[in-house]
Picture 1 (cartoon, one colour):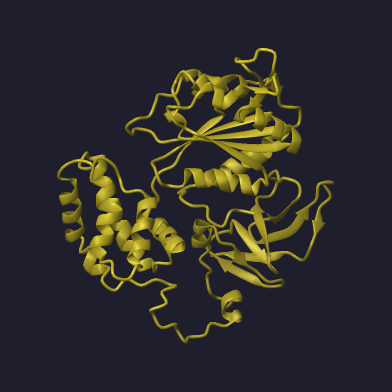
Picture 2 (tube, rainbow, N blue to C red; picture 1 turned 30 degrees about the vertical axis):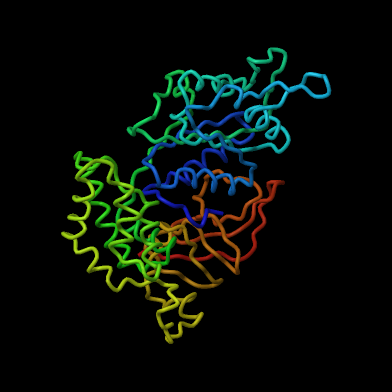
Length: 394
């Protein structure tokens, strides 16, 4: 099942990582993926969701200049007069992989780890996937055949305080994904999903953010506004008694304006965009102060649109929602869905001939007009649950 909140992606990075991992599970002992992008766009969130979808145990390393080799390897212990050893995160993860078959290690802000510590991971990243403790030469750990450790390292590039990644380390990653800020439409949908602010107001905030980010690229600001800060701004707009200008100051200006003059420029930009006037009557979907609508939308209207209606599946795909379908209906859509829901169960859509992991519910594209929904059990025998669902691509 595709995660409900795919968070900030303009392309298919999330699905690409899952497809890569699912293909190599059990075939490679260690999979190494490097994810780069500006702060606050959901890199760590992505790692967590991938672990959830793989149903895998996850541990993490927080990148920090103070990280020591002992944090990764372990430390010696003295118990009741006898020497022993307490495993660091890498030996613990290898033991967990050998126990479960798969595990995920998130290394957040990898380029905050000192360059002399980074190569500690090299022997784990190598083909033999055997890790020998430098601090205890007689102790080594090896991932068993058929077991897979997924290492996803995240980095923020081109910001103060980061360390260069050693070439010997970077070259060992299988691939590197670069995430960018989302377009205005997608980011406004994300803000609405996370804070319940209505999309038209979110769109105005995102237009302001785009202009500020363009200014940051030109050197007018030290850094760009992150989606995380936009979420904080929208959330603060909900609070009674806090003005729009004060919310802007607390969540944006005081955090972004790192150099003299930037605060003035931010406020001038907000005035030029009429941001506060636009937000004067800002509305939220869950605002208890607003009267609830009395308009009733029946289940039939939601789940079974008119035969000639074109369902906006592109938007559903973008925000990670599934298309609800019924047996025996033809659906007119503007593209194939990434996932569909039938009788309360979600199915991941895959193309014909594409590899599918065992033990998942899938909706397989049989051509341009049909999806076959079925379950692939671990014994490899397909179990068709019901008739095909027909689509017409408009």
